[in-house]
Image (cartoon, rainbow, N blue to C red; front, top):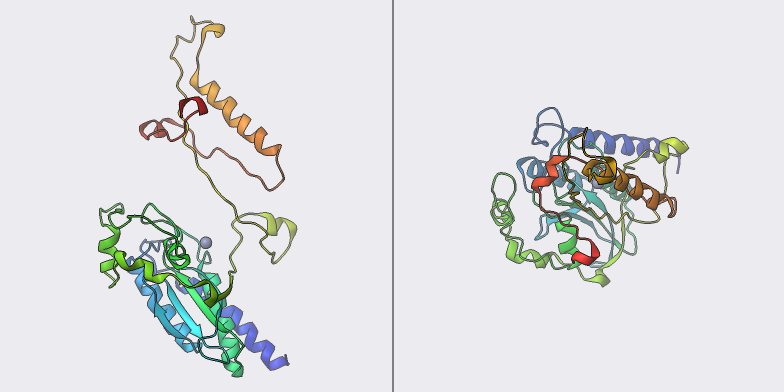
Length: 293
Ligand SMILES: [Zn+2]
């Protein structure tokens, strides 16, 4: 790589970052003063259109699959060759970060642009994918785009509603999609060589280690439990300790017990209690002790 090429590639990184930031506000966000880009919302549609232009500018042909995932393709040296897929998601959680997901997509666009600039074709195609639903921030099911692409059954999801009462089917119809045809997003295994995703670290370790970059060796498999601890109210002055059934102290012991159990595993194992309070009392308790199952 000569000096001129290095300058161009430096610009590419800066452009990827700038585009993420550009997508962080109106019209690419559905909230004021922050980023919220839910699946199939107004901001998602606007962001997908901006991305379409950037993908085309980088030399890709662009389509949207049956689950609303945008796919840019740069053919290899022969047509219809299997593809190396690069990408991430362009939806966001409420008050999300500019680079969460978007960076992985923009870096994919820049990779393709670098090959296109040199007129280089690889023995395989390059595809940049931008999943529309990864976060599950609108409907109560996450990763619809990648599930559909992998051919995983998503069940009867058309009547799932967002907080405004809009069903998934209605939201999909709004962009010309049909929930009943989501299965058409499935890709054949032999058409995909590998999938590569650059993603921001959503934790403090890289900064703590003063490392710019790391390779992911495992994916976190999160399980959530809501636990109701039921005690018995008793007069603070007259019910003796040996007869008390204080829910709060039992809950405290559970919180510390969970931490102790997690520490006994490998360093990568995490268990934490994120919320404690009356709020959950109104929610159904999904967790059952083994003897109650
Ligand atoms: Zn993400």
